Figure 1 (tube, rainbow, N blue to C red):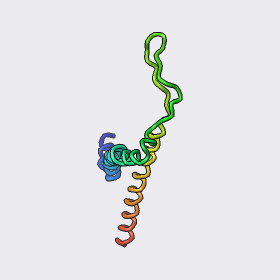
Figure 2: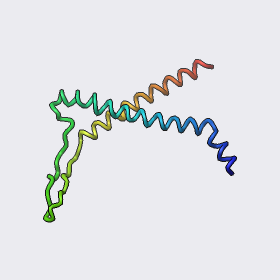
Figure 3: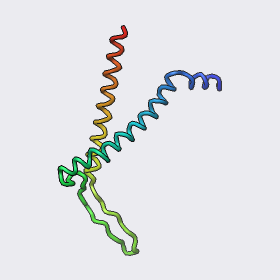
Figure 4: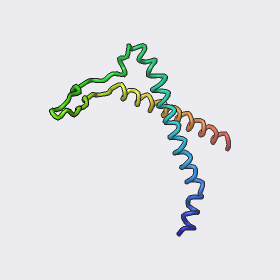
Length: 108
């Protein structure tokens, strides 16, 4: 059983998948930084900070025991950032698949 497991792990598909997951996680961090640190500040500059906001449903309070109760907020700015992040990743993956398909067609 150990020998079969070693053969399974050594197969190219498993190693390719592992490498893809690691690179995908790193690429996700890069696009998150791009959106949060570069794109959204520019968007917020032109919208006077209108996109980073949120709608406060209930303000933060302090209960009778003196414990802080956090505010309840709909963070639509964060949601917009995640959508932009998704589209950047989807676009790059589209370009990669398109390039790979082009390479496959020219190899034949």
